[in-house]
Image 1 (cartoon, protein in one colour):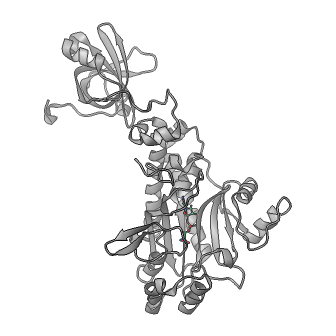
Image 2: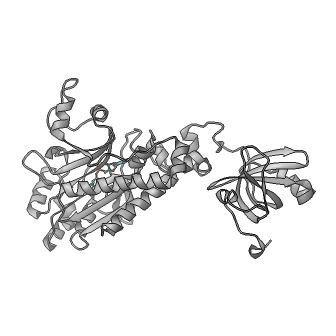
Image 3: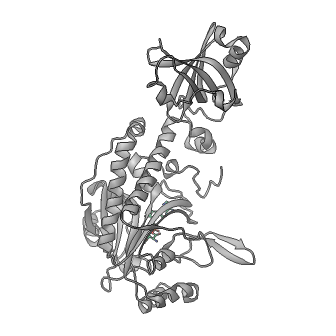
Length: 433
Ligand code: AMO
């Protein structure tokens, strides 16, 4: 049947609203087949749900009826038929097939059952991710991720930010530190970018307010539930803003996402069994010093030490949901964060319970101070030569942050493992599929 001859394609969701007697085309994959003598019920799933197809031997003929009875589950089919009221209790309308064609056969045994009736380990699901994404529960996570990305863009466009794309193949360490992936780049070495930090700062010289959503790479051997080697970051940087103004933008982005997901993903939230509530604004703000005071008692934390996972877990029990920890010690923040005084930096982390979602701050915009800070961090000035030079072009005061999109999706959907929030996660043990 040529494309022109086929009646309009309907998605499962549209079948329920369509008129009885209407002709339609249904496409999707077979979830179930129930042969009952001269009739065979086939449920076809698409992105929006299930459609019940009725194959009647008298209507489609012996050969098509045999194919419909024998085709394997998960095969891709195209059905042309007429919408009828259904006699099944859970289905309002069904499609009585006039034509039934297998477009692509599935070949069992399949590695997992994407209907979710037979549970599989996360590792097995990730090995067969393309099939796992047919599971409505898995698909719900990525439909919410789609809303999250759309919401982020809408907020930044509305606030007048320019969306940018910085290089991911770089010749010098962006942030310093040892967690870089190295690769051969013709006759020299290159790295995979661990963040767009230096580029986004440079771009404030011309574009003033920029944001980027992109993947970054960290060669961290930590096998935790919140670290991966390739993660998606939302980065923003804005000239003439101080750290508190950029914290307000983070809050605005997160709150808009929650409202958008609540409105656009009601069904997906239901599938995941998650109720979203609008966070109380403004988000609570706690200084590093106050956090350390809170943690006193069980364990001695010296002022200036970084907070470890267990400390953050304890803090997460006190400050639930979204909150900021700000004014971190200079010694544990990177060279590009401005000092408030000799000890305290103009920095912040956005937290969700124990989970660090974002970090940022006001940046050093004075060239001499940047050089001093690079030296005191034991970084090689030569590697930062071209970045330092951009400060001679006139560097406005600026601030910004980087937010882990995968972690934010975990917070919103209630996932415990970051790997579930990423289509094809990469960790020290996983580089495929
Ligand atoms: P930072 O290194 O704290 O800051 O990273 C920012 C945010 O990115 C997420 N993140 C990760 N997510 C998953 N797996 C990882 N291995 C991983 N590493 C980081 C976290 C984290 O809060 N340049 C600064 C940001 C800035 O100051 O603008 C930076 O990269 O959610």
